[in-house]
Amino acid sequence: MTPAERRLHRVLVVDDDPMARDLLAELLEEGGFAVEMASDGVEAWRRLKADAAPFEVLVADWMMPGLSGLELLRLVKGDGTLEVLPVVLQTGRVDREAMLQGIASGAYYYVTKPIDREMLLTIVRAAAADYARYRDLQEALQQGLDAVASLVEGQFRFRTVGQAMAIAGFLSQACPEPERTVVGLGELLVNAVEHGNLGISYEEKSTLLSEGCWGEEVERRLCLPENRDKQARVTFTREPGRIVLTVADEGCGFDWQRFLDVTPERALARHGRGIAMARRMSFSRLEYHAPGNEVTAVVELPSARR
Image 1: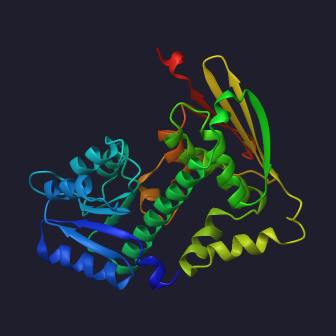
Image 2: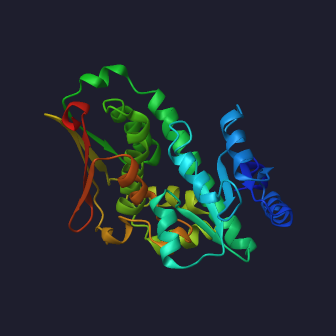
């Protein structure tokens, strides 16, 4: 990713300490981000609600007078128009209990004090990439057909990331909250391609992301002779009171239990939050089947929630 491309990512930094705020802004700008600043949580909340052009990442200090970073996070996650905005909490509190408190409120990205430049840029880039994928999924969702609302059953096969995202946008139109469903369904379908059929492990992805060649490696593996005929599939079934989506790939599976929840360790990592985020915001239930190359997601219909 070039600096010019990264500059498209608009970041709001909020910290009541002017020196800390300026340092964060300087480091992020050097990393290619377009940075704007707020001096406290109240000003940040006003900016988030008022600005016509959306911010793509919010970096907030945990401890601030008035409206703290954690309280600001809860406002963001409780707002229907802002809930998908990635919030990076900056904190000196590295104890597990404090981080779990933040994770429970929707904080999936952390940077610890004193600030390490490379870690800061890595985490903010990961958050920006997640938001960019969300925006792409929203575009795919807009291209879905209204007729899918009458879909009762169907199976779709795909082999590329582009096909996965298009199908996620299409099928999510059949769900009662498509904007939420498309985030999780897109994650499951893209995982089926990247980690399932192409066999890219968590550790390999960490290395590829740090080297900036993740996308190129996905394209390279798609063209390998052993992968050319591999397909993933998603089955859609409308049942009384619910929609059932089953995603399967031709891979060897993985240890899915490690990824069902965001742990403090995962909150400090470059990636690996997607399944937990999908489970939290997109589905009523998410269940993997051994050896991990098949997953069932359930979306309850409004009548079943009463």
